[in-house]
Image 1 (tube, rainbow, N blue to C red):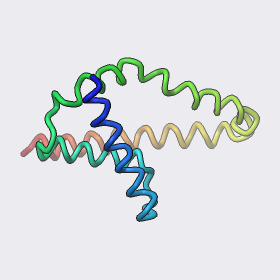
Image 2 (tube, rainbow, N blue to C red):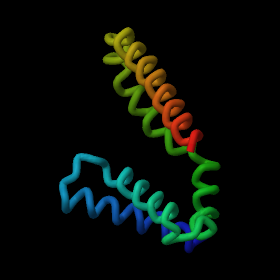
Image 3 (cartoon, one colour):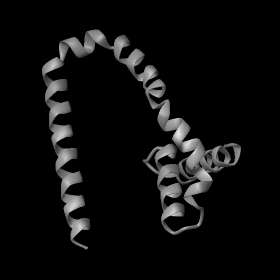
Image 4 (cartoon, one colour):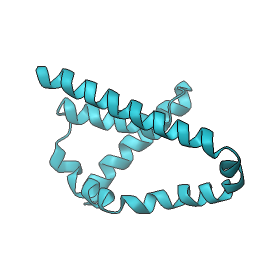
Length: 111
């Protein structure tokens, strides 16, 4: 478990370093996720090396959304004022995400 956490946090740290030094407009944690994905894809690290910690983190994923829920409560007045625009944006982005995911899956499924 400790070894898998070290792998995950090393990639997170590497992503943050890239974000900081190259001033890339993508968050460091996203860069870290892409790097760990590429490392797994190209078999630079084995899935069994990161699976214990990733399974644990996914199991308690809901806990990581608590700060965002509190943040929404802070902006409740603003959301109440623009609820129509927020609702439309959420619906459109959800539909767009579903469409893109489906299109990518169909394209990859043909190969």
